[in-house]
Image 1 (tube, rainbow, N blue to C red):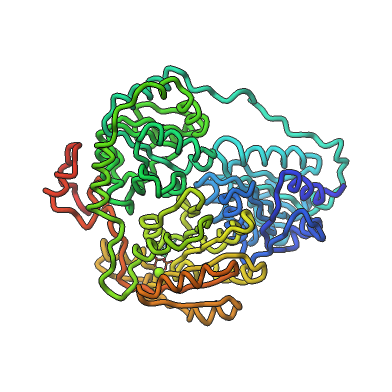
Image 2: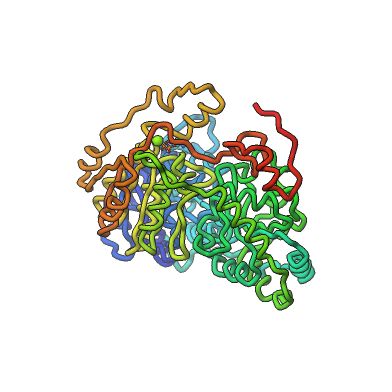
Length: 587
Ligand SMILES: Cc1ncc(C[n+]2csc(CCOP(=O)(O)OP(=O)(O)O)c2C)c(N)n1
Ligand SMILES: [Mg+2]
């Protein structure tokens, strides 16, 4: 059998249903092996960055492992942004690149290039993949493929890249004689010591102000139901990181917002005043803790659970670090005898957080006709179809969405946390639409980010994906403007100066996608109703004032409870149970 046929057969056998790619000479045999297949759909994108992110979206949306394919050289290097995002956000994807024939590959020769478009992608991506392989012997193909699937999916998931030279793609192999992958170090997963579980249960019982912090690891390990069970049984309020935003339903009264630099003020006040934090599958990114992690949740004993032992103790000192898959941990906690012991009544603590929320809501009803972004997301929540998958780009829009979209148990919120590439929402939505056929998908981007992968409107049109694209147009790179306003004297170099937008209505219409535009708050409900009235591609441009800002926002050196606009010190003191910190040095 031809190796390229074997590769595609193996993907199909692993349940892969879609491959996102752009063609090129160095993957011509792999593409030829896709010709006429009905078990795998080839989705031809218009930029390899978008193909990689579509694979990422496919995997994030729960559609098995994501697969993207690109030719050698520029095709391969264009994949890098998506590869890195899968690495930082723990998304299982396989990236397959074509390479020049082994007899024209330089290997260790000290020259720049021998074959046309020859580029050592395996080395280039090494810091941002779990594994990368050059298959220079056709007999290794089975071992490499099986090993790569296992690697991408198990432990902390992530990307794997396989580079296959042309002469290997077209080589013939005896499939029965191929060497299989043998997993090393297999065995039962590490058990969490009973004494640890007991100690955690006892600490919850002696705490007064416990909080669960849900990170991306909750979803990644399939533990959402276990988390809901644990939180509801104990009555402990749940806050989330950006990546954990859809790990717990926001319409549950225990949900207490997103924490961090741009987090909800009430959520930050909850962690700042907590005396116990159960942190699940989160790496305490600076966007969560502020720039001085030692000030974060300083009144709390922190139990930090993560599958990646290298994350434990990396940013935050944990009272108890637990290396475990989140699902296994929560299953163990839920079935532990400690669950039968009576728990303290945390209702006073929950009421206190509810009080913060009332005082500092994530949006207020706008008193001007201009569209208020937080209020827009609030209205959008009310009109989103029940099982929507919302894919959110990067910029101010990401933070407004995170602050004010209320995600229910059946909805998803997909966004890039670690790589945070602008231009990711549209390809992510395309990938998600193939992973979850029949579900309504929404891609939300800013005007700047939208332009990075605007060409994928053609993919949307071509496949008639049920993706509704919403662009919040504030006439520039708002997030950067906000930074320049705060720290660089409003010198809007490149975020406003030198920036311009096309007529989005005309561009989107040229892709034969119906486009609409609104400029006033009172137009929002009808526009959304129209947008969600069918399952075809659609586009809504929401015009914002240029000076719309993300509030609250944490400035450098301040603890999370002290976001801007700064509260009067007396008011902040009244909110705090844990001792306040002295005024920081401000840059
Ligand atoms: C690929 C990439 N380039 C640059 C950035 C830096 N960046 C972060 S947010 C942002 C502005 C995004 O502008 P827009 O999409 O209009 O959203 P807004 O902030 O205005 O809501 C930029 C340029 C990035 N995150 N990713
Ligand atoms: Mg913008």
